[in-house]
Image (cartoon, rainbow, N blue to C red; front, side, top):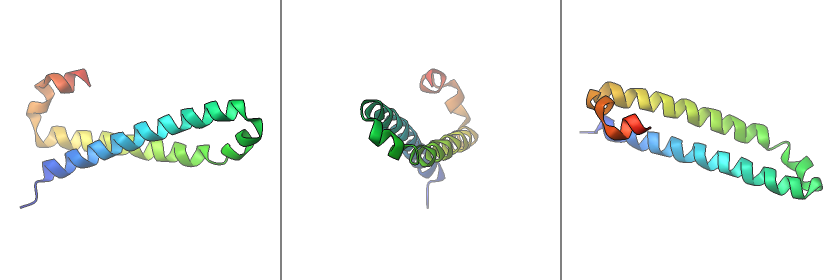
Length: 84
């Protein structure tokens, strides 16, 4: 039988990786764009796409987080959850 909790955890981790990776990419491109003004004009069209990717990832993190808590109420008392 398929373990829904495990699948939710996997999606949660993937969404977190995409969000962090996208934010890092935006920061890197911004720094490169500050150094090369010609490249900065090209990057302006990419920023909205990456911004949408970050927003979708954050929504996925929230939804999977809620699903994880609903499936396992013991997570609320976990030190890891409290730290997050």
